[in-house]
Image 1 (spheres, rainbow, N blue to C red):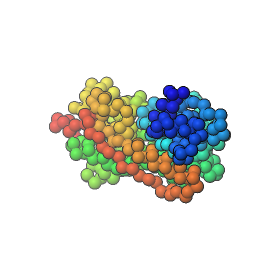
Image 2: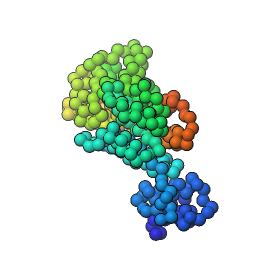
Image 3: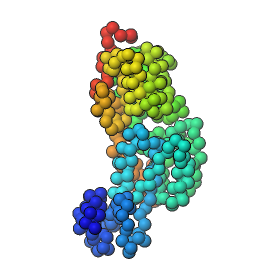
Image 4: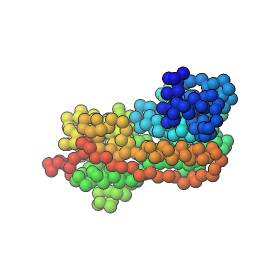
Amino acid sequence: MSRRLAEVAKKVGVSEATVSRVLNGKPGVSQATRDSVLTALDVLGYERPTKLRGERGRLVGLVLPELANPIFPAFAEVIGGALAQQGFTPVLCTRTAGGITESEYIDLLLGQQVSGVLFAGGFYAQREADHEPYRRLAERNLPVVLMNASIESLDFPRVSCDDVVAMNQALGHLLSLGHRRIGLLLGPTDHIPSERKLAAAHALAARHGVTIDPALVQHSQYSLESGQAASVRLLDAGATAIVCASDPLALGAIRAVRRAGKQVPTDVSVVGYDDSALMNSTDPALTTVRQPIEPMGRAAVDLLASMIAGADVSRDELLFEPELVVRGSTAPLRSTGSD
C-alpha cells in the first residue's frame, strides 16, 4: 500500500497524504487533484478502491505513426503527462508494419467511447492518403487536435512547428557557411510539412541569388535507411551540404557520406530536424532544428481539454517557432571544394 501511495503521489506531484485522502473518499481535496490521482492509478495499473470504481477516468486517444523515430516517444511523454495532469487517461495507439492501421485504431477508440483524440503525426499530413477516418471523427463531433500540418480540408485545430522558419534557419545557416550546392532531403512528395519546407527553401535561395538544382532535391520515407539511399543521389549531384527533414534522415545522410569515403563536416555538412534524443551524442554531434515539443504538446492538450469541456476553440493553426542548434556536423565550405 505504501509503495502504491508513493508512486501515485510522485506521478501526480502531490503528497502521499493527499493520495490517501482521495483513496479513502475523504474531503478537503479539489476535484482536479482527485481526478488526477484516479487517472494516475489507471496509468500505473493499480485497481481503484471498490467505492471509486464508478468514477471512470476519461479516456483520450493518442495516435502516433511510429516509435522508432525518437521524436514521437518524446511527444508521447509530454502529451501523456499533460493529459494525466488534467484528469485524462491516455490510450496510446501506434502503427506498425503489418499491424493495426490508423483507421482501425480510430474504430477502436470510438468503441472505447473516448472523450477525444490527439494525433501526433499521421495520414492527415499526406495529400494522397485516405482521409475518410478523420471525416468520421468530424461527423461525430468528437474533439480532435492534430500535431503539425494537415491537408487544408480537415477542419481540426492544429498545433505546428513553423516549417518555413525551420527551413530558413537550416538553409540560412549553410548559406552563411559558404555552401551553395545544398541538398534537400525531404519526406514524401505529398507530405504537407515537406511541401512547406521545399517552398521556403526556394524562396530563401532566390533571395540569396541561388537556384536549387532539381537534382539536389530528394524525397524519401522517414527512416535512416531511406535517408542513406537518397543521400547517395545528393552526393552524386555534388551536394556539399544536406538539409534533412528529420534526425533519422540526417543520420542516414551521415552514413552515406562516410560510405562514399568522405567526412562530416569536413567534406559535407549535415543538418537534421527535431533535435530528438541523443542527437548531441552522435559522432559528430548533429546540428539540427529543434521542435519545441514541450510547449507544443501542452498547447495541444489545453486545446483538446477545452473542446471536451464544450468550449469553441479556434481552428487557426498555432505555429511554434523552432530553434537552430549548431553542433559539430556543419562547417564552412572548404576552399578547395566544389562551389
